[in-house]
Image (cartoon, rainbow, N blue to C red):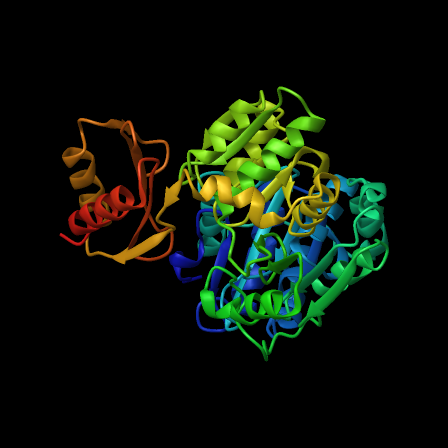
Amino acid sequence: MQVNPGIFKAYDIRGIYPTELNEEVGYLIGRAFVSFLGVNTVIVGRDMRLSGPAMFAAVTRGITDQGADVVDIGMVSTDQYYFACSTLGLPGMMVTASHNPKQYSGFKMVRQMPYLLSGDEGIQDLRHLVESEAFATATRKGTITPHDFNERFVAQVLTLIDGEALQGRKLKVIADTGNGMVGPALQAIYSRLPIEFVGMYLDPDGNLPNHGLDPLQPENRAELQARVIAEGFDIGFLFDGDGDRFFAIDDRGAFIPGDFLTAIMGQYLLERYPAAKILYDVRASWAVPDMISAQGGIPLMERVGHAFIKRRMAHEDAVYAGEVTGHYYFKDFYYADSGLLPSLLLMEMLAKRGIKMSDLLKALEAKYFISGEINSKVDDVQGRLEALATRYADGKVERLDGVSVSYATWHFNVRGSNTEPLIRLNLESVASPEEMAAKRDEVLAIIHG
């Protein structure tokens, strides 16, 4: 079948419904998944998107026509899906387009937790099978069996934090789930904790009546930030559409960069797991390796992407990993990323330390001056990356993921987008905000040619 090759991405399958990704393609992807992995049973869940029921029906028909049974876990967050795959030890397909706008659909695919299909390990094989329709011959028709994991998930997550620690300090938290998939589990968990909890847009709704699903876009978090300040909350939480990413607003109403959260939570977890390994991605602030090392941990850098992070965590037996874009991974949660767990970890930490979130951040803000991620549209991504590597050849140049260059007081990473003709720049200075701004502008001038 002719299919848009662009939907087969580095970490998942994703495209606009129904032009790029529709029931016909979904059916073939289901057949290809079973055929490629040679499996007998597949867990399938979906998010709240309006195309979800149709795409779920199509992919499960493909799976069962190919001879495998389906465990239908219903409408769930992606961390609930990872929990189901881990608990049953089965491969899975999650019908989700994560934080993309509502017209998108897609699939996140587990081979066996914590190993996911990725662009270089399985996703392109699925593409070739879909194009050729050269599936193995099925000898039976599979069945579909519903299975509700919600209560088991909530109970398991609650075992991973110290609920007693929350008794001593009455914390006030407000959380915006943006009509994505986190609301129901979030309510179930926080209703069992001694915390003053207020929720915003907790009901899953694929119409997205309030705002978009990506909290990295400032307009999607503006209302929460205003309410944190106006109503005196200790902290505010945001989650992306499928619930595997987490973001926080401090008591000043300020958005907390993901690398600062990685560093703070990593240092806190090292109190529980001394001398442990902790992963971070190539874009991160030097705050992460500095704080991990200062606490006696072992910081390890990895390329961007949940498929790569999970694989490396399992290989290294790391206890924790964080990505700048809000993915936080835990050994205690099957090396998977969860939006809910970091929210609980921060509440536990604030309660135990009796400190404001803003006080933890002030020390980082005074030392690490970060640009945040800046995206630039370019005609020739690889050519621009090579121009930067050449211009800054007198620095320490690394190519783990894109081009990373380090000097004594500043460093940057530039990567091509997996989906668009974009270069993504993350730059930091530990000398001054002025050096950060000057070097940022200098690098951007080269990117823009």
